Length: 465
Image (cartoon, rainbow, N blue to C red; front, side):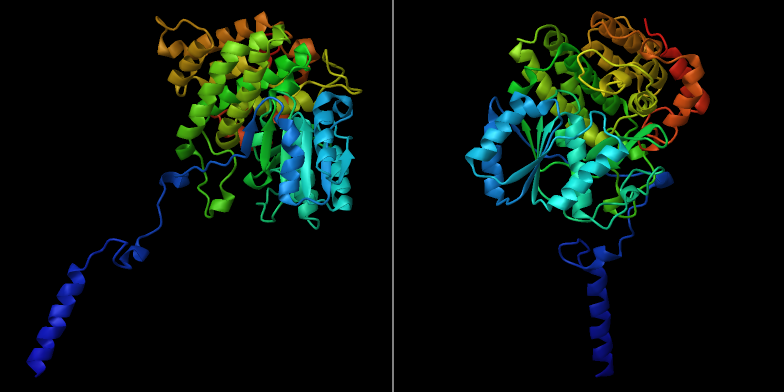
């Protein structure tokens, strides 16, 4: 009997050792160690994007969308200039047609500040809204994102969600209300992204909030809204699209970004270049090369303006997940430290460097600098923008892209560098100081940079032609 039991036990042990180890038929997979990463760099990327609806006249559907959502108290956000223009009127007509109860906030500041965000947040908290509609450019849509976030998390301190090191950069865990974004410019791509940018006045620098949780529920891209945009607004918005595409395509690859998050909720919105973002970035860049000059020079060119409106969204999908790097990181103090510059075609009562302009003025210097890493990507971008690279040497990629950008900007009458908008070499230390806190984007540069490197880049951007 004993011998029989021993044989049975030995047979069971052999069967156990020979058992299938695949996850479908055993629990042995639960003992596999967690993914190890070399040097604590990330090993994954995540795509997040708003729903997008495109078409001429599609704004008329906003009221139906809100009715479908069962919205009872809607916040409509815009700015003073837009409040009397066709895009807002189209939304108002739709809200009236479908009996939507709403309150309008038209105090959004072009190039928002922490205080203008706080004013909008206070309005949103008092209104106890169950849905939001933003009609405008990036300033309006970003302000609406912030208002929705803090009204949905009323006990949070303002700095809780602001990017570190300026704020605490806490992950957003509260549910937000539905947000429909109706962009009226072809530039920021804010209708697709989980990013809200503002000027932090105390430090005289731009920063923001970045979380997939704050991206709009729906972006309504109606190309009719771009037909009334003045020339310089079209240009500066287009330069933002240009740099979104270039920076996201040349950003540090996602597998080289660190640290690897211990929890996916901590994986940043800006993750580094990746195969999906690359597709959108390159497609947006091709549209910019084909249509931006046409859209600027001829306001009646509906094809060009409609395509640039789409390009803005395409680039937004790309950079909203890959991120941007030095052009944007350096642009924030350029905007934040503005002295007396007031751009043509902008009806504002304060000094202002439009975001797209602040970004593009450093682009020749930046891409000449970053091209040491992945020069083939820089060369590919130059070719898309019109450069003849048939006899080009790979080591010259940065200079070729820089020269291509200079020609592009010169043809469009862009201000000749930072000096032309009021800066001098004496301002460089302050500009560098304002760039240093922008680690969320500067660390995505494919080439690391020192303070001396930043100083040299600002100096090279004082005059670009």
